[in-house]
Image (cartoon, rainbow, N blue to C red; front, side, top):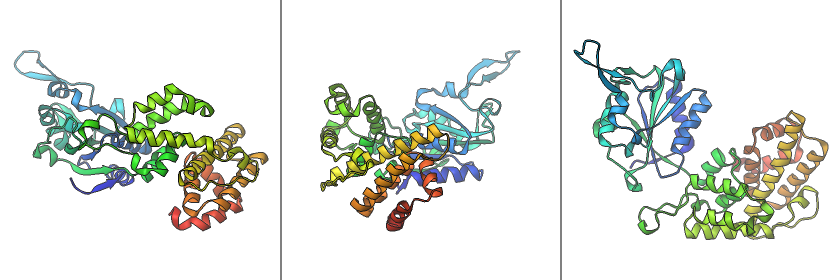
Length: 371
């Protein structure tokens, strides 16, 4: 497999190809659960164009091409088109047709797609001019359902091997989608636990973490009152069933630390609060403080219906920034501001338009890290 391409680069490549009318299909390979389909869906959303997700492994070659039936005088066969493929009048003039899990499709289905991927047609069907084909799938070494793509089909694609890093996942997805702060703090502290699937360890291959796993765990965490989380046996059993043993042990121990953290509300109120010295607790403080600060700022934005804060909230934010500047090393300052700003675009806009001297001082101090 060729060199890996970062998620944000895959996004930019897709957008460039679509905006410049490049018609050659793009194939995105990647590990289980790294967000291949989600990345393509996001590009369609960002460009405000149509999107059809076709799980090709679920269909036969006949279903793709359409149902054959005789013409009126029964002298030839015509094909009744299916409604799986995009139509301009129904789905819009521009869009992405996603051939999801293409390497898991049976060889006969891949053969049926030759014409679609080269000629943008399938039997009597023609793909609208403004639609682009993107395929996704796992690699052979991932040991899922995999059929080698015939060279004649592979040659029709521009191919990329998409990688995900903890930094990209946090900045491009997790913070923006408000993944639970205990998850984001843990992945920031232990980035190697974002994706733990190892196809070489067949005996444990049913239990592993992926970005998709962590989003599911975030949903589980949100069902529980955070003050009672550590005693919520059901939630922890659900999490245990989602992770390999090592990652579960690390994550559960990490979350138990929240009961040993300094008084977060005290920081907002300007009380003297000592920063813990342990690295794991530092990451948990940063994530919890960013989450708490974002919540009160977003609350004001919603109530006041504009990007402004009342005087009480301004005071709390100033005290948080004082604590951050006084107690955090530059790398953790950068993490705090990134997480805070990415939770809601209005937060970043607010700091850009309001005169927050402390914010500007922190930015100056960490500018090289934030780039």
